[in-house]
Image (cartoon, rainbow, N blue to C red; front, side):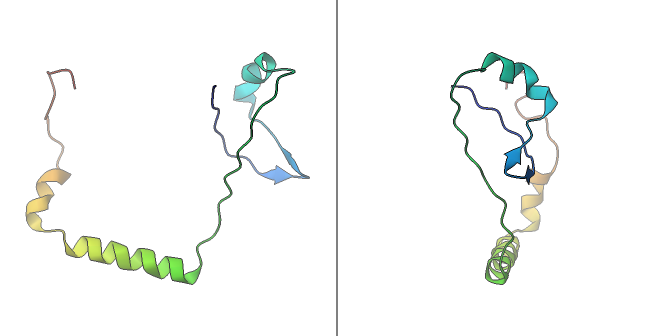
Length: 81
């Protein structure tokens, strides 16, 4: 099974497949496909407050000694990673 992912608006109950997938569509002509729609939903006020609280609590646990992980380093270079 092969997956193709793209974002598109729904207009008149139709989804326009981007041109970059034209070749894919030609190969699957007359075949069944499976569609999964993931619909973005706006956050309600409780969800926004919860995410803000989690972010604040996470950052409270951050110390200056953690800044070593923020820097670009050469760890793993030259050993195939």
